[in-house]
Image 1 (cartoon, rainbow, N blue to C red):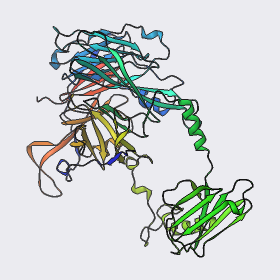
Image 2 (cartoon, helix red, strand yellow):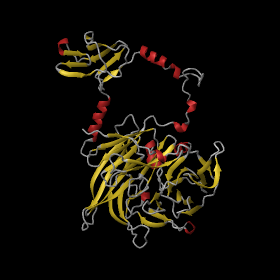
Image 3 (cartoon, one colour):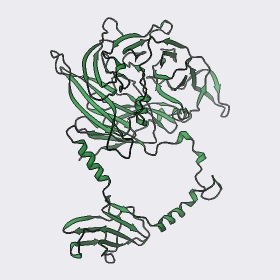
Image 4 (tube, rainbow, N blue to C red):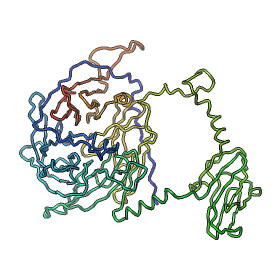
Length: 582
């Protein structure tokens, strides 16, 4: 059985700035343009039965504004008339109204349990579109942005089950076969989940193909499903369609279509309530193992063999427990007996005082029972780390931990996220990166021909990573650093969306209402500036700017390009000119 390779992300030290001094608030006004929409955005609010945190992450915080990464400064949204509306900016002072490029054939208002409509720009001439009712559209668009060749035409249209949103899609051309591969996300009810939320997250990997030029019909040729318990922060298909990468708080696994899910659930349920095979406890000198015997067992049914580093227990001719012990024992002094239909084994430690973390190396079938005297001794040894008072005497030899030294923005989840790469053929995990405290922040498309980049917090900085599926030994490249942004963003309690320019010149985040924060990367100063404390000349300064939108409507969408920020509310689309240079 192949085991996934444990990998790590390699930080490029030259991209870090240890002498970064922070962002200077700039009061320079930012040009802001406002466009009123003909019809409101097709916002879908969460229903009463969509009450979990996963529903909020996937659908409640959905970004209704979509950027076409194949064409600069071109954004799309879907309004409540079912129209796909586009705004392409050439000149800020000559803005036109958003134009209709496509209209969904179905009347969305007649569906009670629909999700938000979603769109993904698969290539420069293809778009995948979902109306939120469970129907997937493949649309050939021609060269978008060219009025002579642009024409949105449905090439595939099929109902695929429960409602979903589109996460990612790619276009593949192999000889005469053209394929579109897409990732669809659903949150579905799990009836047998008694301890959790009662829901699970489903990622469906669908491949739609047309065999040759003569055959005009596109058909589904492959459907695979992954299941997990949390909405992925990031999920993308590799450019060659041979793999998939997911960043998530809880792991995903492929579910085979042929296997009986109900049977699987029952087996899992029975495994969870299975009794331990044996119980064991220890003192400084010895260990006691207790095994419950079947009814009617006698001394003749039991064989126990002691070796200095090994134990072998046989019950009624069947091997019960065998393996290497954690440490050595005195085999001559060790013994066993039957008491009240239980087998009790007494092992004498050779290394007195050594605490064993496990009885048999690698065996998880037993349960360790710690007695009250041991718990009291451990509590006494750790007493200096706790106190009923907050930092009562910090000058003593072993000062207690002071919670005031930690800020809220330094606290992470107890469980960490992981980055996994799945193989498209074997459907197995091939690479795993434990992200630890590297908090996921956002994703951005730097090059539309490559996978989307993802941004993680490393210490106080935010580091941007570009996946390269073709480089097996160095699959994730550190391409940019946003200085101190990991720390700064943690203080924004009301942040909703996060983005950065594809050329890394700035990062931006917006709150739920009105305010947009822009963090520019360090740029050379036109005037001479000195650091008063150190008396040295400062060559570069990083600026922070704040824009306040003239609206009380909640922000529904947020996208960044190299020159502009686009902010979508229910009835307006705002453009903030961030960079003037080309």
